Length: 204
Image (tube, rainbow, N blue to C red):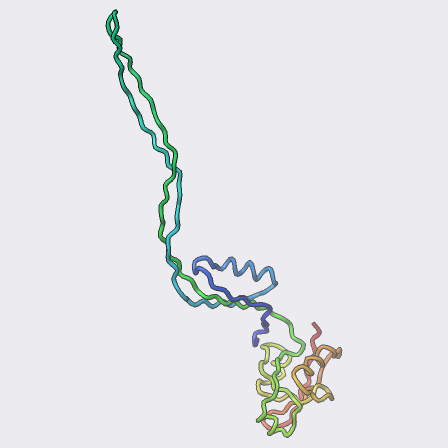
């Protein structure tokens, strides 16, 4: 997130470890418009067994013989030969063994943020210190963004967006989505000190 990437998809599956390769992951990333794929794999078990392979089998036998006939004029001998073909099949059992793994893939896309940071809700301890339920905490600041350049820091408490008090992360996102100015005034609490930051506002 600090590099400007957000997740646009993820997948989890168990597969033969040798059947998953980089080209497959890149192909899926291309389909959904992702710029980066993070992959994790963990061996789970080995599957073993036998696979029957049945092939045709033919057997040919050869035979030959003679026959002698006797008559008043003497004897006659005849010679002959022949072949006999028998058709059938033969099954061979081939052993196999495959190593299987759990795979997890996260697909990321790099985006251009409006001000360059992500916020989360305040915890109860922070609310008590502020004496208010209003505000959100800066969680991640994107490198080289307006917020980064103007020294907004992770852990800062964002209190106001221009003159509007921020009630929640959802309210902050709504303010971002509906704002159309060129710059924004942010009121921040940093370790008990109130600061004002003026940031360029980037339209998407």
